[in-house]
Image 1 (cartoon, rainbow, N blue to C red):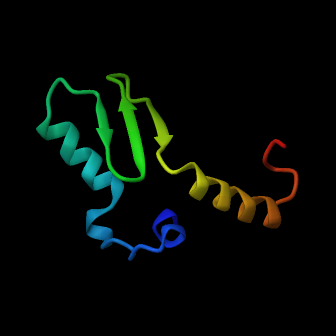
Image 2 (image 1 turned 180 degrees about the vertical axis):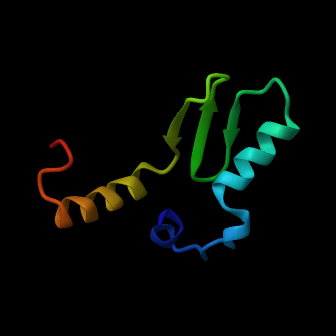
Length: 76
């Protein structure tokens, strides 16, 4: 969705974020952060992660769509 909002072509699903993150974790031992143009993901040994969106204007557009279709779901 973020690629659509940014006007970029949708990437091949064989190269999606889960595959890239998994490849990164396996190949870069000892590093706990993954970054690409849309996300910064800090991951932890217990399996949790913090995801930071790098383009807040795209997140705002996505939130607008969610709020339109599901009023009251997002905090104001």
